[in-house]
Amino acid sequence: MIELNDVTVSYPVPTGRQVVLTDINLAMESGQTCALIGPSGCGKSTLLKLLAGIINEYQGTVMIDGHSVAPIRQRIGFIPQNYGLLPWRTVQENILLAARIKQGKQNLDMAAFRKLVDELGLAGLEKRFPGELSGGQQQRVALARAFLLQPDLLLMDEPFSALDAMTREDMQQVFLSVWREHTVSAVLVTHQVEEAVYLGRKIIIMSPFPGTIRKIIDNPLFGLENRERHPDFFEFCVFLRQMIQKDWAK
Image (cartoon, rainbow, N blue to C red; front, side, top):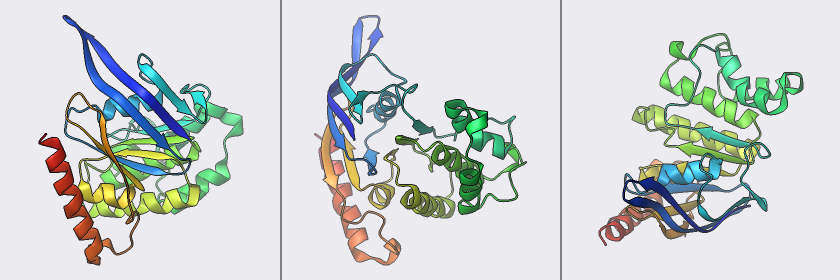
């Protein structure tokens, strides 16, 4: 269970403090996916850093399973826009890195590593370096690393934004397939309405800066198969886009 209650985040500026997020309230059940959508600069990435424990100065409470966020105690996976791969380490080393740091070299689950490599189509690429991979392959490595950690919470900051349209759709399907296998609580930041509808069981709409949560929508079309041929998917995306445009114009 992820809970944020009355959370406000501000940064010091020469004239005092600048509020970035204000009055954030959110409850997210274990194993759920939430898609976070909002205008540029509204604090979406700040909210992810808050959940990751990177930002620890704030007002209010941020809890994971009844405990304050503490990356030392909890397993929190984070996939940034650039995937966060170390260019001097191989695919295998990158995938094992987070789990190795968290539980030690001697306790790595190599059977789980091999299963993820096979699920994500990375077999045969283990000895390559990130610079030798396509964008889609790098994304798969980042996903494998995150899921091998067996995180309490997976945070994804526009992870598919750098991919071309076809690869992006493929990676969305790959993510859902692996997520269904491992059932990880996940928060995804996106600028794309269609991506939010496809990947978010809940869709969180944020306001312009300073960011607050304007609406939380239970999404009836989460993970819909053959979405491109489903009129309900198209109509819901249009409805959501109109709602967002109206909300952001306030």
